[in-house]
Length: 199
Image (cartoon, rainbow, N blue to C red; front, side):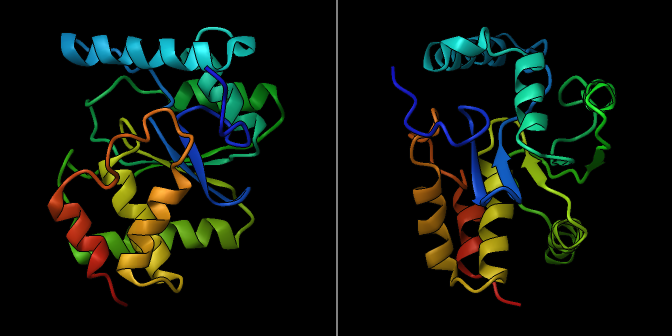
């Protein structure tokens, strides 16, 4: 399986704004107690390892190292507290060894749901502020599909695209991402939020 999107730091990430705003999957441990999630996490890791065999097993260490090496220094975690094992202390320690300072913030959204308009604007303001302050941002949820796609789509709409164009752009940006067959955003409610986004 050849990597058709090797410019992206990991097989499950994509640049929204080249070298400034990256979106994708959860970089920490993806094997919670749920056996179905655990199975699919291992399957996704296997696909990623086959896709980029020179990187070794698609582990937490590999994912985090690839993100830091790509210049990411601000992590926006859309998962809820307790949804998945924490990774913030791990990535901060890894960054310190590389001589890099990392910003980490959790801005939780319930899985397969949408935030309020005011809260979504707070998230977009935070991303814009980080980029304005020369931070390279990585936004993620669990698989990088629903919550992440909602944030990416509304970000694109905030920055000049119509909602319809933003949804098409997400589709284009995700070509080559290993789970690109899944829709992003995931739910009709999430897609409607992007489609109708205006500021």
